[in-house]
Length: 334
Image 1 (cartoon, rainbow, N blue to C red):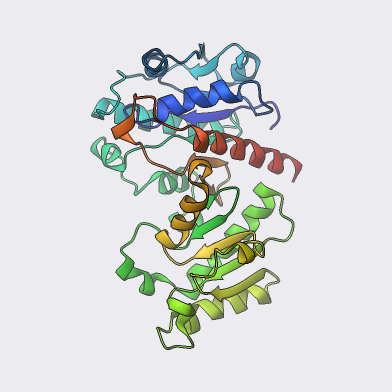
Image 2: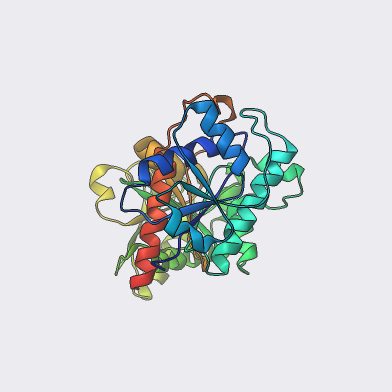
């Protein structure tokens, strides 16, 4: 993987994707980071650089194999689809470019022309308007990799915490019915394997959160812990995995407990995302585990309201690029 670059998907060109990609290149070009290229959108990137006064030369390439040798000259951009740059004003043309860039970046990785994919933020509503039929990019990635949706696991990772929501974009009222021993054991196995393969952790430690206050208080506040969560933990421990819990959600993310595990498995979306964003908002990375390819993304949205104004912070995008680079190195040494 050493000679293959990362592929960057542009994201919605009306959002902050173009500017955080440009800023990331400017700050990572001379760092010890794997080279990367953007899949399409040269005109958008050029217009964004001009609008924001960013000194970021662009280099048009016809094939990902050119990216590494030309990375020092400028940000390599794979020739292809383009659109007008209209920051803060999303359009169907922009959404079509975002979808094209995502598909092209993934294709390059599946064909071993890129060593992984970093996706800039997209608008699910805008993508739906141009025929995108998936709840999000994670489900799309699972499908194109030939996996069932439940085989792709979302992990949010920052310097302070790695957290996995076992249920994601569902109503909170539905969570108790969706939390089963089968769900927990299936996703825990994927997380443990990915921590070994992509993060170089030989014997991963997983902590499993409770669903109810005080992890149910012995059945006083619900039976999900005794009915589903504790049996799953016992089954995983019997397989030799290092798993603890159920841990009350109000204690799981304290500094002392964070030092005892490598990833926290949480029962619902906000239980995982709130602590990651509170601790590591500017460096939070969304990592898709369980795929044959590497995929990371900054853990924030398109921010249409500040796009093109020079207010966007590139920290999470840079962190996503660095993490993809580190995962690629871990896989190559695995």
